[in-house]
Amino acid sequence: MGLPGGPPPKKSRAFTVFLAIAGALGLLLVAGFVVSAVNSEPKRGPAGDDQRAANAKTAKYESDFETVCGNGSVSNAAAYAKPYKIIAFSQGDRPDSWDSVTLTAPVGYRSSADSLSSINAVACLSRKAGTEVKSMTCEFDSGGDTVKADYYAVEYDIDLYEAKTGKSITSLGSVKGPATSCPFLATFSKSSPKVYASPDDAAVDAKLAEFAAK
Image 1 (tube, rainbow, N blue to C red):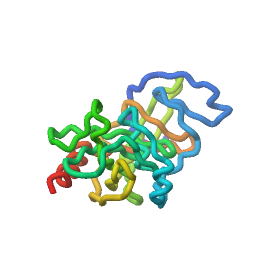
Image 2 (cartoon, helix red, strand yellow):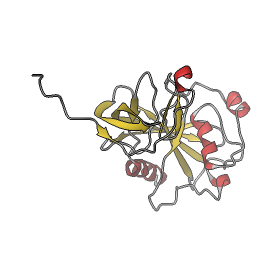
Image 3 (cartoon, rainbow, N blue to C red):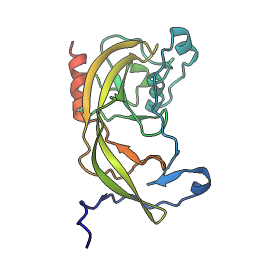
């Protein structure tokens, strides 16, 4: 008789989706997302002012400001000055992807979707190397099949940049990304099934509020 195993993986009630050309392309669809089998980390290169100007884009949506977390800038952003209007993004699970961070604190620095031209700073949260800790294994439904992925808690470094120019302003330290329960939706590589917890929204709010109050 075999020894008893560890606790079973926790199961997330994700939407069931259909697999399409996944086997041929090495892709995995989980809860409505297509994920490449190659999962590299998005990296911010040492871009100069000329390169950032060449990569400038006109923002039509708040999500367009994520270009500042790469090597770009936003031409219709406000010049960097008080009062600060900040939008935040965290490093995503897909290569070179950034996800919006929800800012909920009732303070004046938070940006407004109906006033994109007032945004003058972008907070970029990158996963801090060496801080990931496996918390649990989660199960997801994918086209009727059950797939598993390890779920990791991780810390995020917060760096602040000018929205209009992409120039670095300052580093605001780090916040935790706690992995307390399996996510409802997830994206991960078929060859390396890992999911990272999102940064704690309240902790991000606190860091930005502290900066804005200076």
